[in-house]
Length: 276
Image (cartoon, rainbow, N blue to C red; front, side, top):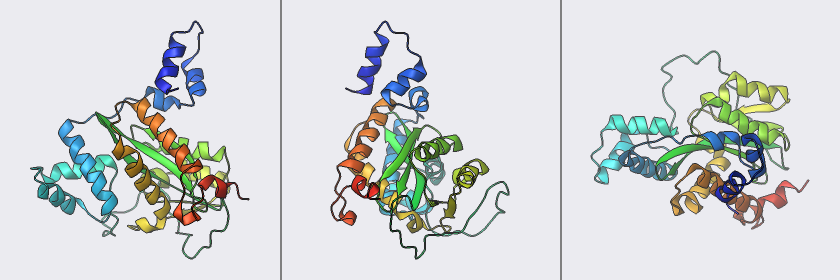
């Protein structure tokens, strides 16, 4: 039964059930229930979808190249709009950039710990990231945490903002399941914030952060973004937030429990995650 059908069933029953309890019964986070998706005009949504698809192919494209990409397709869009849309999507080219300003002293930076590391068991290394997800009349963001050994998605969340609380909620869900020895992130402000870092430190988890402009340092979560977008998002016209939440939930269940992974010898992530 779909989430929308379950919600209708509860709404038409005589039972007085709180919104919190309804979300618990549906397996739906309260943030997903209450959120209002970010809206953009149809023209901008088209540009954002094209930019998102191109970014998966050429993550090294900066604003100028992305602008040229749209212009070469025949769209008369100015570079200021492209810059704003990329910023709104949380997309940034992976090439190294000159250090033009001092780092925020309230944010933390840690060395990259995974170079040359032999990852031999589940929960040895987890990593996380955020990606843009489009829908028919707006967009939102997906956060996920992946186990490097098994490729298992440990936890995920959807939000209409890039606020750090959304990333913390994903982390807390994952820590209810298990905890890693090392947690790897990129250098975005959500993951270098004191709120996020302190949760890892309080759980005695070693913190690893990507080198500046090195997407390959977090390659497994980047591969997962490509999988979910090409195998679910781009194949469907997603109308509502609840529909998107349900679709992502179904896809991740498939990814973890049914999808055969070449890198795992055509086994499923769950088998490797439960190996030890």
